[in-house]
Length: 474
Length: 110
Image (tube, rainbow over all chains, first blue to last red; front, top):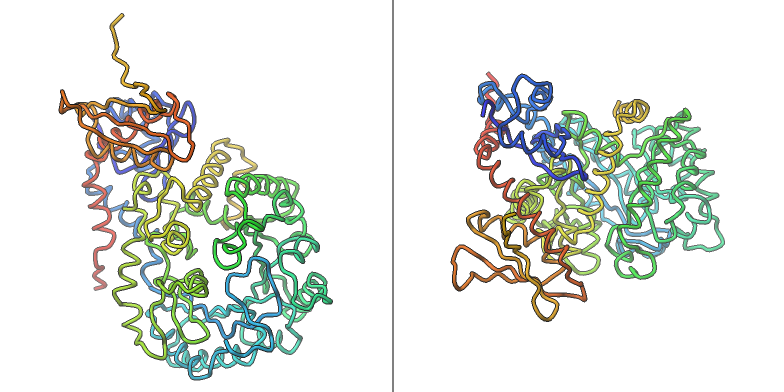
């Protein structure tokens, strides 16, 4: 053999081709015959085919040490999310909420029930804990319930964090996740003043949004209030970028992705994240009523993505968020900060959540499990435990060591591994342990299908699709 | 034409047996291949009584999943892919370790 194979993974992509990927996400398609000649060491090192393979760092005729050095630099970049440790800190000031979403995952409280409100002492301890993170960037994201039901606590935490940051001098950002309906002009002006971005939920056109996310007060028109308040927020901020929206797919959303996307466009959003239902809370409890086979979501997702590509072809710049995230991993050497799909998993080490009572969970989903009496992923409590006990404790070490796709069964050989991630919390919720079982794992099925579809689209070599995909990465 | 001995045998009670030759496939490869089918079928391994280099992999119906000869042929293809992964990994596994070690080596800032 005139060349050295470098680490790669492969899979039969279709009847005539293999897909090969390396540790840092470079990829190449090889005809079946070429693939077998390649692994047998029979490719001419002066052929165009070999030059293509070598340019992807899947084989080399150079000194191995030199190539290792280059690949190591790229690998380090891809894993740079590990460098700073926890940067996303989600805080739940209250479980009160004025919605009654059919897939609620947090066992919300009614607006007049103050039993799950955060105390100032707990809030103070949370902020103190957050600022012990070594990360130079701190993002505090308010979750709920709906945090706007306890806006005074949101203000207290923002101001406490800003005070702490006078000494710590970190890059500090805020986000509030809210259904918008309780925000008034005074609150929005406060949020703008403190540069607190707004993340909201929009499940589609009025009938679908109101079916998935009705308000507790049935007399109120959720979608109409949402639209009115969205306009008010954008007027005060002076731009559309201050508020982004997330959608959740219920059974009622299937077959309606085009309408959902049209609604996002109509309301002035330039992106959507087509998101399947997570198996927690009511979504798990009332699975028969609102969930669906993951294959149905995958088909809807593909139709939705095709529709979005068509919109872009017609001149409307509009991004599908999950595709953009994966494409960034497939087409660029850069890291992506998406906590839910990392290896090692981002739970605890990239993002963490502080509940209203000071309990610390490795992720929002872990907190959701705790609502239903599963406390496996609780790191401790800010009122009782030190930062070191929680973030350098045996539990977090155990979780992370169970959550590297580089060594999980089936993931270890998966051709899509460089683009994927581990989710020990979801594995536990769905399959009973942190490792999970890939052949029946819905998250695995969904992610692999979507990556495969993106590769199919890239493999068409359609200049217009490629232009659109690259425009999403800039 | 040479007389090729086909390794797939249909047994009674909706079971199929695949005879795997350890001269061609390693134990790890057989286990990795079985793993991918274990959600569909109960799968048993038995070393052949007459030949310790052969293992009989028996597929038994589970949850009303019907076993067909096609399934066992897919298993045979999976064995080939897994063995190939095993073979190429033997060539570059140490390079993968070198990359990870180099990537996470402490950086001297001076």
